[in-house]
Length: 88
Image (cartoon, rainbow, N blue to C red; front, side, top):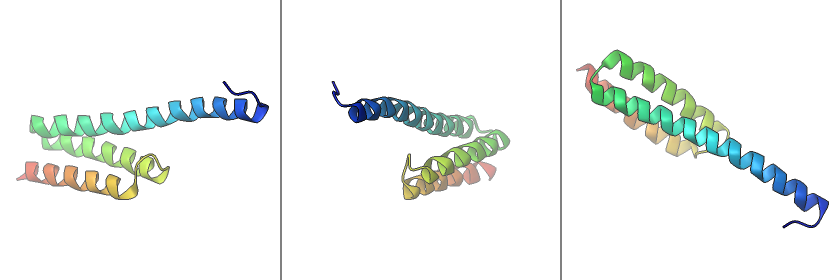
């Protein structure tokens, strides 16, 4: 347990940050999961919309440092390739 005031404040801040980080990563994972479900369902329009939402979530997460930029780009690229296959 923290004894100094600055250490106590840091501990409080860590709790808030941890909660915020967990929420943002959860939103990203959910968006990716919805996109994968739409792709496996075979509906191109629904998959396209889910891809758009996943792209937004991944870009925001990358910009704020929750995931690395190249990781977000790779995930978006792979999802986009799967949605394009659906259009054929």
